[in-house]
Length: 183
Image (cartoon, rainbow, N blue to C red):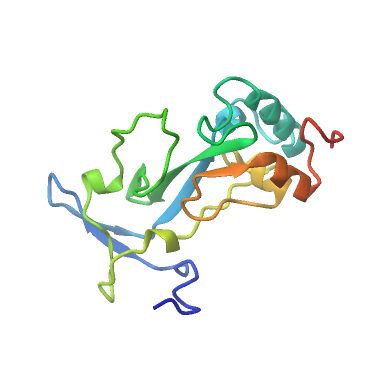
């Protein structure tokens, strides 16, 4: 049964334990979901001091207008989102993430290598949809890959959200999109 507590992300300090399937080595740490919007690694070539979030947003939006920029199944404006499980002892593709049909389907994820994590105190199995979603920022002192998106929109995706309609998000935030005024 869903309650107010179970409808929220796990609180900070929630530690999970799991085992490596091949070696039976046990691991434990806090886990989070890390998101990557298609093309957001464009920020790898810049720092916030060189290119602020609105300028990087404009570069990224322009870069999406190419054959593989938008979600091939959903169409123009829809940007696919990739998901990863991260923590001190983890960085793997997230299980149960949905990807475009044209992307490789034989894709390995966390559960290809590890057992399902359980809470270190209660033994409760992880609910992947309740893992906290990483905040990604783009400002002096903190330059997260793709952080310009969250900085410009004031938005990040919900856990395991497969795509976002960026023209709608841009208009809602007052951000530039090709059919709106520049920032």
